[in-house]
Length: 411
Ligand SMILES: C[S@@+](CC[C@H](N)C(=O)[O-])C[C@H]1O[C@@H](n2cnc3c(N)ncnc32)[C@H](O)[C@@H]1O
Image 1 (tube, rainbow, N blue to C red):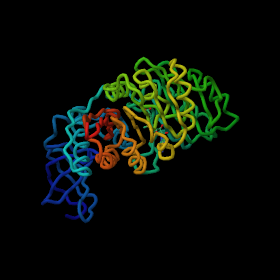
Image 2: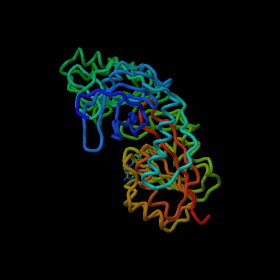
Image 3: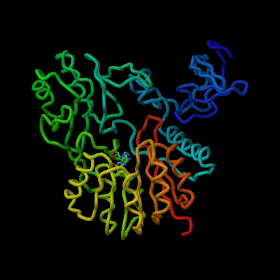
Image 4: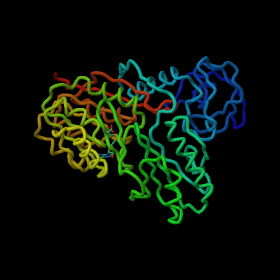
């Protein structure tokens, strides 16, 4: 099968990134934007020892789930790589992705009933964009090639309005010196962070963004309030520019409800990788004492402030890495421990320590099923899966959030 050859194939399944997987004389070919059961004519564009890559030349029998992507940058940016399929197919793909990852890494069949979705477009409350001259946008997937965008359909509409203003600014003041922009929205407030600016144009920038509530240049607040206020599940959270906050508020709200649904009247609960304290503060009314660990100093500061904002006083926020501080939990009798680590997952020593600490229940929230499954492989020595559910936190992308509720094996 030489490069450039054109063949007709049927799409058998998806890989974890949502590419179509086809077989030709039992040889695997990956094809971007091809849907299950479609019959397609493809051209081979790359060939390796065990697989080839093809591109669609013509769709001969299209899937009923095929959609025309709404985003004008769909073909260049890669940020909304699943926009060519309807959401039902996206949810099915994400469910199968979690199942196949657990099968491969843990050798088990997980009983995952569904991946829930609550929105599809305009859901992101934060984006980070690159700026080069008068261009502003995302880097094309796996490249340093900037795709100049006027709007992103995954973002809150207010983000696109602010993007429009910033675009006009960088076009007019070409010696601006900005190379990175972060735009964040909360229920009633908005925030902009830029890494740098030509001091001559700072006042013009602030003037241009007169509707924004908080503007930072690097670590310096140059206009308005130092943090913006988000509301979720009846609680309020202030967040500064460098603190993590879930990007899809509607879905995060349902995820938190599900993750903590079995936690009631507990004595000691723990929130590892606690960010601005969303989970710890949600636990505070369900538990006598809460301990939270987070390494980002800004997030810990926000979290302590958020505890006071919500009229709560039973959480100990510990600043530092989980792997350094987890031994402090050794002699506690923990009822529920929640962990929500970054994409890289938790680390082996912390997980081994958890096996010694033995919380009665563990709730693991993850944005990466691969590290979730690898970490479960360690935890499974003492814990079994009680429930597992997916949440479509990032519709139109191949990413999926998973909540895994674990119970001790001997219970
Ligand atoms: C996915 S976020 C979860 C935040 C929070 N649970 C929420 O829902 O908003 C992961 C958090 O882990 C923090 N983090 C990353 N590595 C860490 C480590 N080794 N120890 C403690 N916190 C860490 C990050 O700063 C981030 O706030």
